[in-house]
Amino acid sequence: MTSRSASRPMPSIRPATSEDADAVSRCVTEAYSPWVPRIGRKPWPMLQDYVAVLREASVTVAEIAGRVVGVLVLSNNQEGLLIENVAVAPAWQGCGIGKALLQHAEAEGRRLRQRIVYLYTNELMVENIALYVRLGYVEYERRQEQGFRRVFMRKVLPEPT
Image: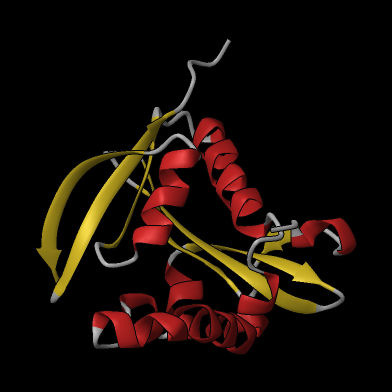
């Protein structure tokens, strides 16, 4: 299988604004819709009100030619920097956008002087779990939350020099 990234431009990554709410919602819906048949319901990110999310969380978008093709939602807390959502539009999956967004999250974690970046995914999204493992995340817990079976994973960030 060849990488799709060779012929595709890399996105600009920027903070989302309130004007991005519809584009963010559309990207998240496109990204998570294929999972509905496997998990039997809409994944948690598809149930969010992105006007409220943009108001309450740190949201970053990956944009190509004025189109939002990736979304990253972060929340800083005592445990570390939580990656609440990372979504890439299906036409752009496999092009390095998700990895770029996760690297952005790790850089943000270092900027905030956090030692841990962590996330969760549905336990049936085994491809996502495998991707996170390849990127250095380690599973540390499985639990049921809000009706979803979640796998929690974290990555320890290097000490600042």
